[in-house]
Image (cartoon, rainbow, N blue to C red; front, top):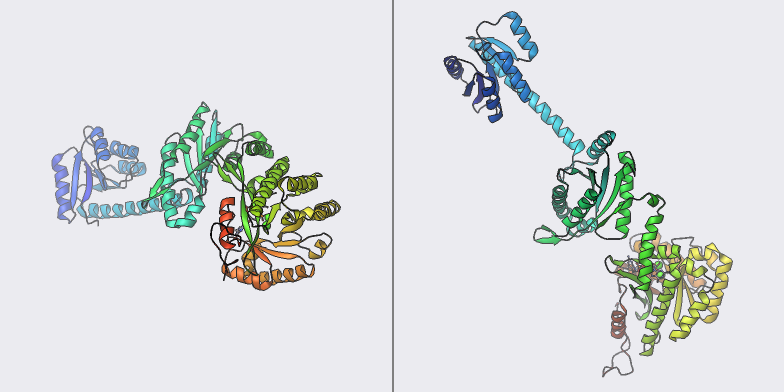
Length: 583
Ligand code: C2E
Ligand code: CA
Ligand code: CA
């Protein structure tokens, strides 16, 4: 039996009988607390005011009966054993009471039977409770997210589909994705990531409140379902969510600044099924993410063919060229023998006033598709040649410059003329310029490529094949073209110090390249092990974070000045010509 006193609600019109029951049960060794009620109202009040282990009811009372009392209990929805304890109970009455849900009927005065009935029913009730608990637990596992206690994707999809089946006038599905949350995890570890995720869930829950249903899908994705009359309600909620991310999240005295990307799809316009709406909201979210800021985008039909998305980015890119949002960085290319800086590769950057610096991997393909690359490429070439010529002018006159030329740029008929006019205008001598192209450029239209390459060579310009190893990688085929430099892709270099196969491949490429009289540049050298390996393998030069990240022109000039003090007096300093940088 339970250690703590049994809390018993006694439905009984006689105070004396109730006390007698109490005394007898106490005598039989039961610790008991009881309260007597004799009307519907009093019983209701008692049920709502405290927890009861048991209801023991007289059968017939002036204002109340055991069946009435049972109804009150059943209405309350509580699972409490109900025992009728009464003088004579007609057989038929007892049967109908049991059928109605009474656990047992015990004759007044039969104490041993009452005690064993109470014990049995308490045990049964405990078993029922444990079973409900287990069911609840299983339900939680299937439908809730452990970390944040929010509903999970399963629950969300089921509930939203049911809601959609009821055909609301209009509804919206918001797909909320955290920007760069993985970076937080990677930097601070998962326990910090989890703690911040809980704070995020709390803030989102506050925004959504009872306006709609919020769920955590997985990782850093959330969903919100909202039924509305006026579409401004959706915008208001999206705005509110974005605004909720303005203050930092605090954990362990650290401040975390996060932003979200939101995509919105509406019912019935963007779909009738939860899956279709989810997909459309997710694709709208991707567009938001491409624009890289805390904001939201509504799904538009045209986005299906992704043309709307391009239009948005292209417009922004066009402005970038017009508004001087582009700038260049230069990454040093270093001799592996002697460790001197041989030259640098120009890499274009886009600094959007609101979106921050956007990587060329994102916008070069778009510039290619839209044709903007012609204008952009011309600007890069002009700017880069001009910068390097100025370094030549102050004495660093051996520096080479590599410039990337995309497939679209390479295919334009005026490329050669454009390059020579830039060289003429800036005064940079052609032998210092290397044009970097990828293999695919050569494979697409070999005849055209051979012609263009020959024209460039005739001017003294050098040609490098970029990202070698990622495409066709046929050295025999490359023989047909007049190539000067092979740049081995960083993915190979990445593996070189750990994977003997990669090392063997790079080594074989270097040997073959040598036989074709090509210079070999290792790209993406990040560690000393990789450096030593590519040097041993026979690469001529290297480029990578181990030596330097891409730098602004001023930083590049400083680095060159440091490594290569000029022999001609600059101020009053005279220093050895080259220092052993990597020794
Ligand atoms: P790419 O020509 O292969 O340029 C090298 C890329 O590798 C650069 O990325 C550079 O920052 C990165 N990198 C250099 N060293 C390391 C290293 O040690 N480890 C790692 N993980 N990465 C390293 P970035 O600047 O993001 O440029 C990406 C690509 O965008 C370039 O690849 C190039 O294909 C294109 N691109 C950049 N600027 C221009 C341009 O002016 N015109 C054209 N057509 N394409 C450009
Ligand atoms: Ca390159
Ligand atoms: Ca490359």
